[in-house]
Image 1 (cartoon, rainbow, N blue to C red):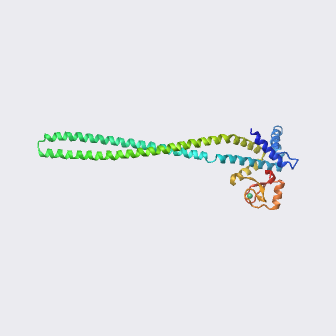
Image 2: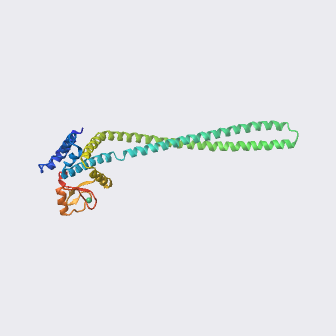
Image 3: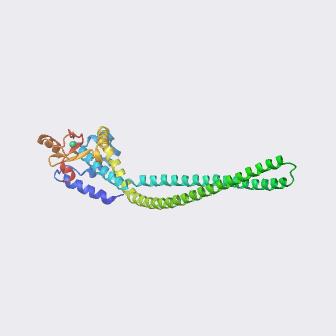
Length: 289
Ligand SMILES: [Zn+2]
């Protein structure tokens, strides 16, 4: 339980409502409602709320929701950055695996060609032996052609072996470069993960606490109003659905509010929305201003 924040909040609300002695602070009120709920039914507890309190609850909900928004903004981009790094690492791993496979294929090509060279050399030996025992010129010429063909085969294979060897070297260099990049990315990922887990554990408790408080408040707000709040909040920039009047203007879109409307807002008799941005407007006193 964030007793401290709860107390501060209660103090703040108590301060703002001290001018109207008949009203209890919101948090106090909320607690009374909760305990009353066990005796009476929910609807009678709700109808017990004055419209001022309705607006105060909405404003309180907004303040806490904004705090939750802040926590999430601080945590912000980190999960995405971690995800990006993880994706990049998978990419580099795949690239390395592919290159290793390519090298294997080239190496098997090289051994095939080496066998080819050996075969040609053996054939040359055999043909040279046969040439010693030929019976006529025709046989000799035919063997000469075979010899010539085999030495061309050796030449071609050796040329290819040389080229493939260079290709392997190139691939190996590429693997080394990629491995270096990969290890940099892994270090960066470790750092980001560490950062994320620190921020998450730091804020998770606060966030949970705030969410449970909004849940309590939401129980006290009529569903229709809550739906409107959520809709406005969802559409509004900065997630602000309830704003105070600041310097005669809407605290959300800063458009001027006519004096009569400001008076109505100050009376807090009903829910009044900004005619420009649609946000719910509340008395500046709610914020303790
Ligand atoms: Zn506005």
